[in-house]
Amino acid sequence: MAVVASGIYHGVNPGMGWPLVVSAALMDGGSRAFFAALGALSVGHFLAMIGILLPFAAMTALVEWQSEIRIGAAIVVVAFGVWLLFNRRHPRILSRIPPSRLALWSFLVATAHGAGLMLVPIYLGLCLASDPDAGHQAAAALMTQNAGLSVAVAGVHTGSMILSGGALAFAVYRWLGLRFLSKGWFDLDLIWALSLMLVGGIGLAVAIW
Image 1 (cartoon, one colour):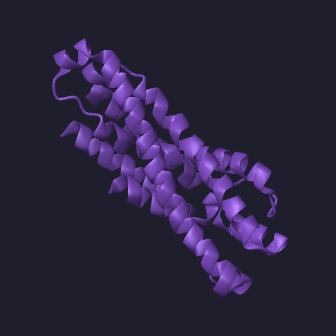
Image 2 (cartoon, helix red, strand yellow):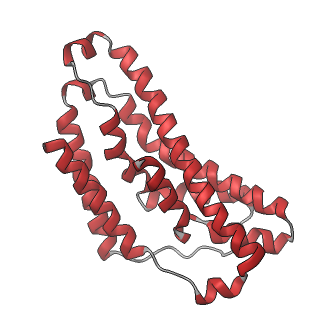
Image 3 (cartoon, one colour):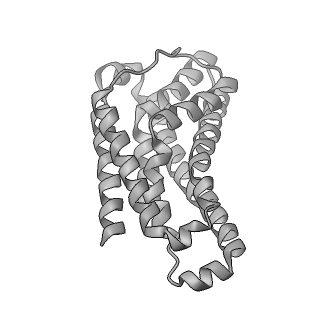
């Protein structure tokens, strides 16, 4: 539920790129460009998520030091949220980016915004080992299972993200139009920073108690 909810949240956030999907469709004048841009966004976002999660999957120390790792990861997420709270500057990017570059853009933006970090406390909560001794004896199996789980988490999250963002982009492209973007635009920078702090705080509380 948390993975899906965070994916929907990322998808609705315009900073994750759905306005660029609208732009691609309007500039090229067709739904083919719409879905090409949407696909590029999903590839970039998925790679950003898996790039953050896979290193944790490779940690055999996750068994013995799972509480410490979860606490440390939660603190990093909270600290990043605090940093974003006071640092609102974003690099200027072109409003029209070809789908060939959109995957790279999606990867860089998701990484810079800490989108993958938001998943770390959730992911580590799914990787708990109830028996440390058995976990040490099956370290290789644990790494394989965790790697599969990290791919699944990134996939479910990206799927939720692209469905929610794609639905919003399609509504703007087909029915609402550009006037909605100019008059109905919403800035989620503050909410984004606070949500990172909230997710990190929840992860810290769960790890401690």
